[in-house]
Figure 1 (cartoon, rainbow over the protein chains, first blue to last red):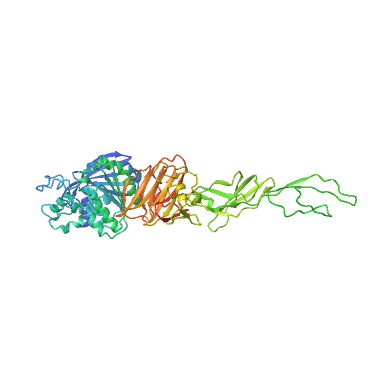
Figure 2 (cartoon, one colour; figure 1 turned 135 degrees about the vertical axis):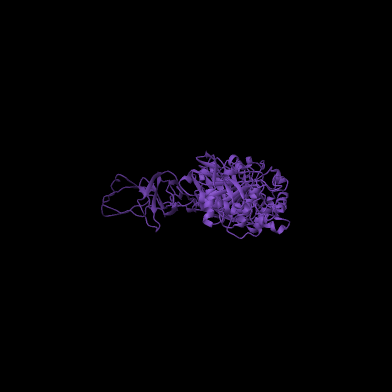
Length: 292
Length: 325
């Protein structure tokens, strides 16, 4: 049954686009997702090295309102990925076209705002399973269809995706070689975005929210040593409107002695212009662990 | 000046107890019952110099070179020095032929070596009479970069350990007269080799000491705090009532950084060619910060303490893999 499942997965991968980039290929694929019960697209950058060798994989999780396109057209990551022989996988940010009532009403909940959780509440629970999609289904798909080294992967993301990267890492000790984030939502339980999303996806019982909150997870983390790099724009409107709360995460990591280097970058906002500016530092950080 | 006169019956004489590095004139006169003959032609003889003494604390090395310094060992000047270098194997035995650098005009010599080897270096003083005996040897390892703290650059409040690797800022008050004469920055420089390429060293610190660790040009203003001008770069640790604060200072500016685990052992990697100065938490193998600079001239490692405490330099270690690009 498992073998048939894998076979079906392989069969269902359709190439949507392919562009040569930095000596490698930026591709987009579509498939029928089992977790999300809908067609999903994801982007894959294959560096030149992937033609001859298995490469480590860097998973990028995008933020609110993004699709698989934002990262590949705006972040400027392909050259650094090519230089370091790293495959970059960038999924979409939520299931799409599921026909769920209300899914397109807000830009910060529903479509484009999956929050990388496995929803338990109706009408979201059948489709909104981005946590399992990112941690289980997608890696299996990547490992069986591309020249990916299954033992070397790392994760990163922006804003909601930064929250996703941190949560995936803290909940799966030892799985990711390293993690980094750009302007992550560090403590969703404590901010309006997180409270709205978790109430909708996970229900009123706030104890169920803690399993998806990086600050809470850090306070009880007990796994292999981490090395977290976080960049935060100093002029980020969402920082000043208390959506991101990095101080809470820093406090939790300081108490638990989880190594973090948190850099506040004056003048930078929440946009991809900010991500672009520091992406090569992050790829370098990941390469150190992926290519060790 | 007549030093001595020896009566002999033979037509040869052995003259002993000559001073080193000295010129002697020797002549012979024959004596019979009638009297003394005129002096013979004078023979000039130059005794070889005494061997020099290599100053271990004055020597430093890096992966591709070593700077050897020595005391002449002679009161009077000599003509030149010869430095002899022999490669040693891991058991301490000689391997390969000795190489010699001749006609070294002063009491120091920068020698080109190969990375990750061990060498034995000796020095001879040379004058017209010939070379001296070899000095006591100095073992040189080209793994990593080795330097000592330069005691004569140290602020009076600092004491340097005998091995030249630990500095300590004591609690005692300086006499008022001395305070006004002192440089404000309680710092000391390290004797880093003027050699391009990459250098790496580590500094052991503790949670309670406010320190500045970095590099500075030789002519940096000693009255300015390390990192406050454009002639120095440093990592600074500050204790506030609520937390530990870390800055990476150059020209008075630091990025806004938070570090969650206080480094107890800091790795410093200097790359002249790449124009970078990087800092690491060695125990965690964690990169902290990198300055991108264009060094106009050679720099010295610089160590400063902003409150009483101490720190120890660990060097002569190979730069760990995670510090290399």
